[in-house]
Image 1 (cartoon, rainbow, N blue to C red):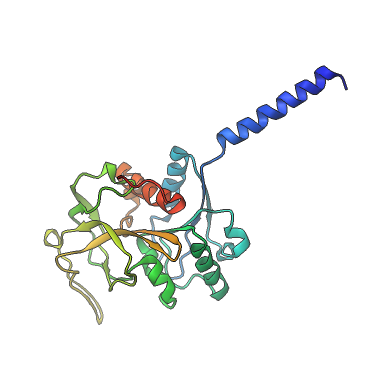
Image 2: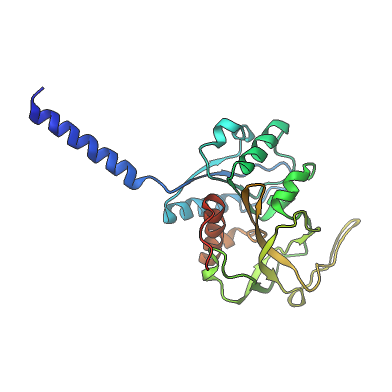
Length: 256
């Protein structure tokens, strides 16, 4: 092989390596949508929105409904896992342990809407999400407010806004580390509801709908927004989701 040809090959290899480095996504996320109870109609819109968010913000997202993805070796490739509209008992004991160790290794978790309606028999998951779903009234428009605009992704929300949602009522705090970022004013909608013996009357003067926390070495973000398919085309909501994913995956994005 001539010296010229060798030089050409070396130059081509360097260009390929530089290009691969330049275009590599900034982090990688596992998107998980398994349902074992109620199945939300907005799952596909949610997946499409998160894929668009990943494209707009240059990160990689891999979508699965297979719980076998939750093993120690496989999870090593991801910086955050996203539970989108998950419900019910979706992980076995080994898979639960893999997720717990993954978070404790310094990685991130993102829960969207019914992620708080998941794994009721696993206390640690309740702590990870922060609060459990209890009940919700009919879909209504209400006044939602930003509590902490320092958190990533809230730039597109005004201080107060009318928002239409299936407003979740939650049980007690399951972690002492919760930092609240969005709340809804119960005086602007009717929180009263009854499902058989289960009754909902709202949470009173303070009704949070989104929060984050540092937990056991890792990070967790949760938002109760996202019931309706149309919500996922809303730019403010997309950036809210991105803020949670970005912070969970990197620990960055907070305003000073």
